[in-house]
Structures are given as structure tokens and as C-alpha cells.
Length: 137
Image 1 (cartoon, rainbow, N blue to C red):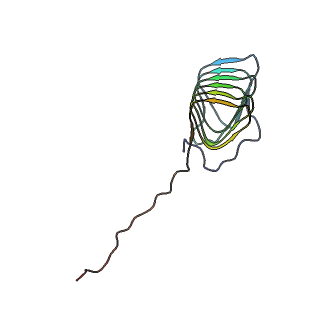
Image 2: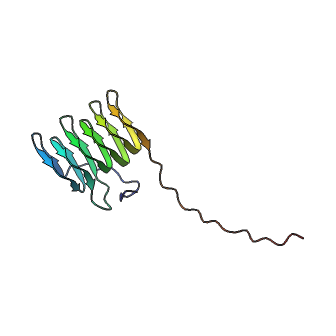
Image 3: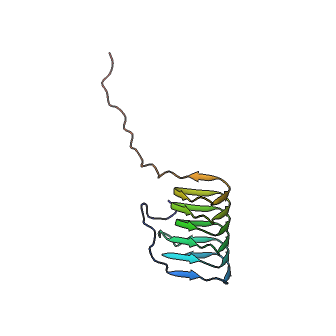
């Protein structure tokens, strides 16, 4: 779902960093792990068929939509968040927008102004077969 490998694990390393005092305007597409300590005005997505992990630190601010498999938020997000695997909202998380998640961990103090929508795993298709019975007589 959303191009992520099902059952993927969060990245344990950070491949890219947007530092404190940095402001980026525009959409960002990344792979691996991305940590934001600065400000982003744009949408954040992982590359197609990549799981990806996004960490938004306490000082960070993101204005735009987020669609990443694993998301950890401890800063401010204004916009919808789709975490198709896991979402962790730390005590200083401030999210204004709807959130879709598969697994959620929300710490005391985190604030969400929007809807929390649980995603279920995609159902496996079931093949239906017609019963071949004899004629009733």
C-alpha cells in the first residue's frame, strides 16, 4: 500500500538531515532515513517502492502532506500524515491535520487536531468457486 513494502522495519540510520536554521520550500522525495530539525514547506514522500523513515525533531516544522511508511514526530506538522506502517507521536508532537496509520504509539502530551484513521492491512483476495452440485429431483 502506498508503494511501501509490507512489514518493513524502520530505518535505524539517518541518510539525510535538514538542519536547524534551514528552511526548504518545495516537495521532497527521499529514500532511507530523513531527519528534519529545520523547516520544510512542501510535501514529503519516499521514493516509489521504498519504505523509508521520517523523523521530525522537537525544533522542526513541516507544512505539507507526509506519506512515509515509518514516521516519528516530536515537532510541528501542519498537513495530513499517512504512515502506512507505523507512527510515533512523541510528547512535543503538534499535528494539525488528519492522520492515517497502521500502528500508532502516542505519548502523553502529544496533540492532534484532526482525525485519526486506522488503516487495516489490505485484504487478500479470496477466489470464489461455484458449487457444482447434482440436480435436485
